[in-house]
Length: 338
Image (cartoon, rainbow, N blue to C red):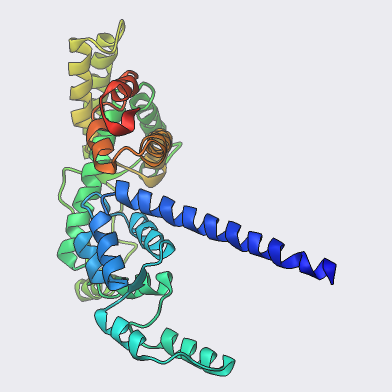
């Protein structure tokens, strides 16, 4: 009997530890939400006992727009005990339902909740259902996105002209095309300053060809070789000028001016996907490193140092490469800078 009497105190201590850990997690979640500018959203959720997707969308800060960030926010709200529902009707229905008395009733109720529209509490299903309310892209929307992609590609190609070894590599590839060792389509597939638009659907193209009596074999593929030769000759001339200007340094005014002229020619070449990937990979790798470092700094300043999220974004912008920025922040007379 004496041995059995020792068990209750041990179990009670374990329960106390679990309660403390749960409280710490909730406090940490609330602090993160506080620093993220979501205080009003948390207060509203606590007042009414739940939040709807409409509440979250209308009260989210402007800097939280990425789907991953939205999912993290929803998860943090659920971690601190705020239920996320699709509509107010869901909350009313939940309050009116009586609690099941048996295991069989519980299973039936859970199955019904998962199957009814607006009643599921699974974040993934809620997110997928919310995605279904967004209209599909129209043809005009596709064209707008395609133009934005081309603008990004042009900016990348123009920036590559300031990086040694890229333009001369493409020129060498074109020389292999002239020598017959490589196909033109393996190097370049078109030009970005010639309006091509988005082709109609495949069925419409096939029908149009049948009406004209054309076949796929008769259609010439790839850019005009004459136009390609003209542009690569211009690119070669400007590349030689840029090399002369950059012989001593690439940062002088004359060198920068010649590299900008080189970029104005190079940016309109629509390179093949293989060539573009080879060029873009170093830029993507560098961007990935930058994002990892920024995420690490965000963790130190916002999550550990309790610096407000909005203030971090405002102060950090423009000081990414300033090694003394951390010292300036530490010396500022802010409550969280101590």
